[in-house]
Image 1 (cartoon, one colour):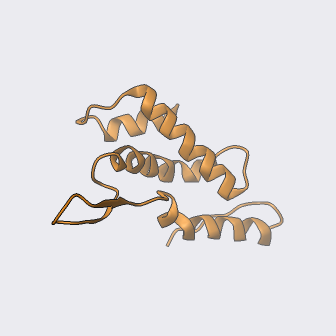
Image 2 (cartoon, one colour):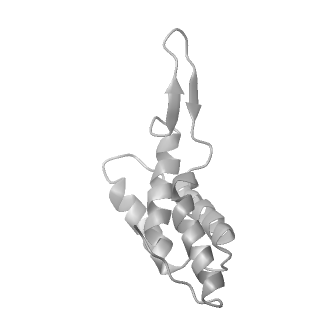
Length: 108
């Protein structure tokens, strides 16, 4: 699994359980496929899958924190790790509909 290997490379200095990472990768890939309307993840979205998986892993710690209180313990996390990729997903879906089913992705 190419994505899992890339995730492990990014997290090489952090203790990461392979079983947990594999589950995160599967979740992210499934969510991307649903949003893209694809049965398999297009190769152009593998980098996004890696980024989102690392964020999902780190969300359990501190990277996904949106706000944090100082008087007491009050922490809230980003609920949708794919939200920041909405533009790429939208562009992909629009390109598919405009090209009659053939996808083109343009990253700006």
